Amino acid sequence: MIAITHEPIDPFRFIESAKRPETGGIVTFIGTVRDDGIEALELDVCEEVALSDLRKIAEQASSDYHLNTVDIIHRVGRMQLTETIVVIVVGASHRQEGFAACSWILEQIKEFVPIWKKDICKNGESWHFTK
Amino acid sequence: MKVTIRCYARFRDAFGEEQEIDLPPGSTVRDAVITLAKTGPDAELLVDDAQNIRSYVMIMYHDERISPIDAGLITLADGDLIILFPPVSGG
Image (tube, rainbow over all chains, first blue to last red; front, side, top):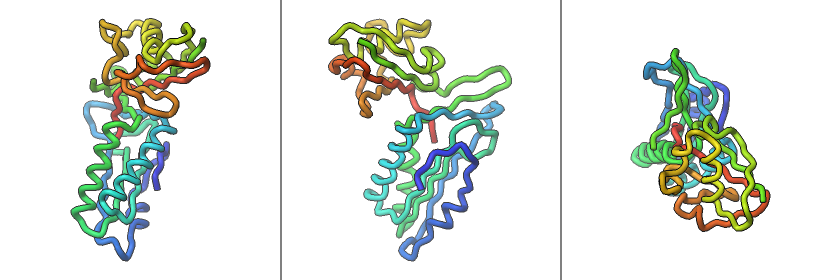
């Protein structure tokens, strides 16, 4: 599944559904809200473009790393500390391709998918903005 | 002619979610971004002192990403939509 959601994500559902006879390893990345002195995190998205980008990333990863399954679920909206922001689950025949694919997918998301984090603090709010 | 510029995240806070701007015929995407920049106090977020679009600005035009460097080469039509993304921070 490739999705953007406002609801909490259950990663175990996607791990379980990634099991295949031809799959020897399921690599999962779970991104969570870290306490950098914030109270909460708010994520904005251009959903139409982001969803299209995530689908293209998944297709590319499947092809380049010979994956059997790919799931990318990104949450947007307001999240509290420790809540799950993103789940990436890849099913591969061999571990090397699974680890490499999962890492590559995350870096692609961070490079160009139109999703933005805003820190919510006691004293105000500020966008993550790295020029 | 009129074109619409839609902004997200940090850019939306500075320039509003969506603005319709008037431009003379033959104007480019770069002209539109410069015009938008002048509408707010944070023009330097979008353009530098030489009125070049900042390299980190992601521009969507006709469902395609275009480089800030190429923005001066693309001529707009009446009713066009330009979307501006600040640097992303998902994942």
